[in-house]
Amino acid sequence: MERRRELFGGRSAAIFALAGSAIGLGNIWRFPYMVGQTGGAAFIIIYLVCCLLLSLPIFLAEAIIGHRTQAGTFGAMEQLAPGTKWKWLGLLTVVSPLIILSYYSVVGGWSIGYLWQSVTAGFHASDIGTVSSAYERFISAPWRPLFFHTLFLLGCAAIVSAGVKSGIEKFNKISMPLLFVLIVLIMCYSIALPGASEGVAYLVKPDFSKITPSAVAAAMGQSFFSLSLGVGTILTYSSYIRRDENIFVTGLGTVAFDLMFALIAGFAIMPAVFAAGIKPGAGPGLIFETLPYIFAKMGAAAPWLSAGVAVLFFVTIVFAAFTSAISMFEVGVAYLVEQRGLSRRRATVLIFIGTWLLGAVCSLSFGPLSGVKIFGQTIFGFCDMLTSNFLMTFGGLLFVLFVGWKMDKSAVRDEFTCGGTARFNCAVFDAFWFLLRYVAPPAIVIIFLTNFLA
Image (tube, rainbow, N blue to C red; front, side):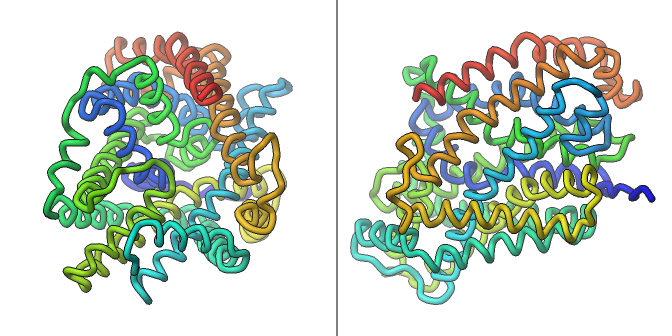
């Protein structure tokens, strides 16, 4: 008996889910840093152009495949290119997000650990070196990170096992508005701090002298990775969108939400960093080292307010991590349900076990397994490098080549225009088609080379 496939309830549910997949930890630490380091407002303009002219067409390529087939990554490629080697793209985009989820859940676990710390004991430190040492001790100790890694993955499994509508859609409908409310509250507090104006200037002051070819490549890469392109999450979520929904409008809404959150996150974090008199740094250290030190420093003057902001911040971090993680979890579950005939609950258990095991090894690579190296990288670092530098960009390139050069143009037009009912003139589709075929492929190659050679 064929299972009845669940679908999202409507456009807002689809946008919330897709935006949730895109909005993650990278929006909070990486985007603000890149803006300040590569031209301020000038970089934001270039980033916006990259989102619209590069990442949106790639997003739509993935979405068109999922929406047209109403199937997960592997099943979609079997439908559109039966009996060809394109099925390996479907398999690649099942494996890639599960590798990412494995180490991403480790960082998600750290977020839960720091949320617990902010609720129970707060942050106490006389200098940033003390906080950094506490962070190093936390991630290198074997058992606590493993416990929080497990807790994080169990949360993902609980949401995904509840189903598309009762689990993923319901969670995103609650978490996405909450995320925006929380980050706006933190922003209001941050920009009101004495000395915060320097952090605001860091983000908005245009410095066109910093706009170099490498800065443009960085903007291209940030727009690509920020939207979680190339790993099948967009394809899988789009397969749950009703046939009468407009993919182009959904894509625009997702890009707008992602960009808006990244900008607000920048104004929530950087003014506080500068108000504390320290230099911003890229990477998870901004979340787990710099900001706890700021909370501790502010706590001397207003302990209750500082403690409240710390709790709000790490609640935001945890929710942002969950919204991205469940989309990666769902790719594997969809494959097992649709291609292997498993029940959703059993598929969820199997994905949990697999990702927990690899994630546990990644977590231990900061402690007992720190001496194990793969091509000079820790296990965690190797998984990150493999997915970010190779699998994501390779998957994105294959998606645009498939839609732009393999699929029939009339089928692509049919999806883009929602069966001819969308009120777009021919020029809009023609622009999309040109960008997809002639701009996106070389741009993805540039992103790959930039990350590979960096």
